[in-house]
Length: 201
Image (tube, rainbow, N blue to C red; front, top):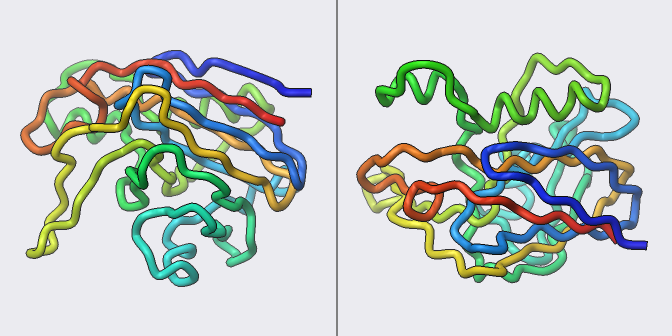
């Protein structure tokens, strides 16, 4: 039986995935970054770690067939199918209140960090560390001089990824709330966040 859910724009949702189950994350309107986190359902002290994964995959971009490792270097999730033409990122940390303040936003602002903490609280967990996410549907480039740009989110409407949980996991997807206009830094198309779709089978 398939379970479906909508992640509203600027919000996050958690969902449980059993070992061997597949799940699909989609951007129905296109151009919407999806911050993805995954925890070992038996011990949330273990989570998916892009930085540990790089040593195995030798790639800063996730690719179909790649296995994501936990911070203990154990396989946790496999990237099965890429329906987004490889437009993904594993460099950017989750946005937070402090990032928005640094770029001039005043007052509270929704963030992927807060979305993660809220989603985990709904599952009964209080977390003190924000792991590095996998940023699906996020277009970033490393320039020759080593600097990073996000020149524009050109991910097509209906783009998706399919993943397989290699252990029992708690997964969280945040519809990135980044809506600030910054040169060479368009995380979401036209800086207008939209909803995401989740399907677990």
